[in-house]
Length: 426
Ligand SMILES: Cc1cc2nc3c(=O)[nH]c(=O)nc-3n(C[C@H](O)[C@H](O)[C@H](O)COP(=O)(O)OP(=O)(O)OC[C@H]3O[C@@H](n4cnc5c(N)ncnc54)[C@H](O)[C@@H]3O)c2cc1C
Image (cartoon, rainbow, N blue to C red; front, side, top):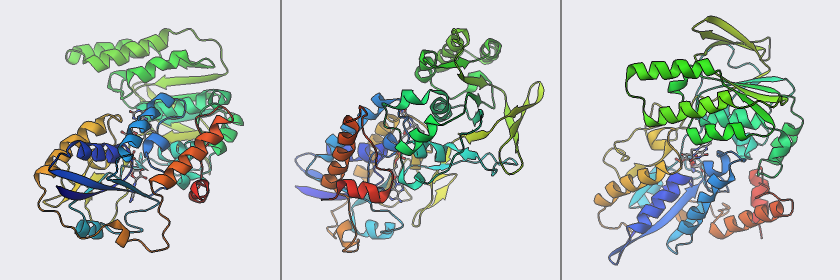
């Protein structure tokens, strides 16, 4: 039996699905020893720090990840960062293949004047803050104003808008970070605009998420019926309307027609609004938009930009247009590969990373030679480096879920590296 050693960097969906594809490729002739390296003390990537707290069902995919981790040939090395604690070249020397699944976490910028004003923030800050990502424990957001503008037309923009527009008590039974929950309870935000540059027919929202909006009990959601009619006409004039566009427009029409209950909190979708400038003296006061009807000014107290993500680069690999330069997931002719958002950029749902992982693993398998047998990650870390292995992570996981159970939440998350390490400490 031949055993290959594969290092996977990044314990998000792409990392686990890559490990799963390798496990599935094991047979009586070959097996794979998998070391999964993760910079945080906690795995699961955006399933933990991206997916909205009020969508707990989506997070049940973590059960699949933990099944992958239960394999005897799998080891977790969390609290270990590529570029900080070890270098890519050291992994390349020791492993038969290295797969980079480091995602893309930096928020893209609009590049318009006023973007750096206080309380003009990115979804790449707001989302990890409310999801207890340790890098954002001290992030500061001012929710004392009444109006927020979210710029973007995808599900991340919708998550941000919804988190601001629901009544905070609706989040009490979720795993929202405690610091965010306290702040959301004190929030004065009543009106949240979601603004899209193009027409409704081009929006990247997905229909199941849109269809959930009229079900919100304490939030009225507004879409202008005319926007949908015009979008329908434009889309039909170009070509046969694609299925997902038709489904989206139908979901938007249901929102437009939904009965409004006079709730204090509301969400408003605006299409064909291109942001030109964020204005304010020292702090956000308004956003100026270009629209088909001329310039529109929306007075507001908070701006959240949700227009996509790019990768944070590290040494040893070339990044291009916000992602790792690769051909079908392979980096040059090397034994280094990439899967997930680091490879494709920030698109697709969790499941997209599964098919992506299978495709790249197939290429990886076809390029394997004789196993190297030249050691592993354990030789690269200082002897005093605190590695969060699978047992350690399970203790963190249990401590968080136990604390949550006591108060009717799925978990109470540790919010700093130190508190997470403490939760799992013996
Ligand atoms: C706000 C938001 C909400 C979303 N909601 C949904 C949803 O409801 N449903 C759905 O299907 N999809 C959703 N998605 C999409 C889904 O989260 C992504 O498709 C998926 O997480 C991408 O997987 P990934 O493994 O490529 O990246 P990630 O999930 O980002 O994982 C990357 C991992 O790599 C680690 N890492 C980064 N750099 C290093 C380094 N140098 N060394 C070691 N480790 C490193 C990170 O800490 C992270 O754990 C959402 C995305 C966002 C941003």
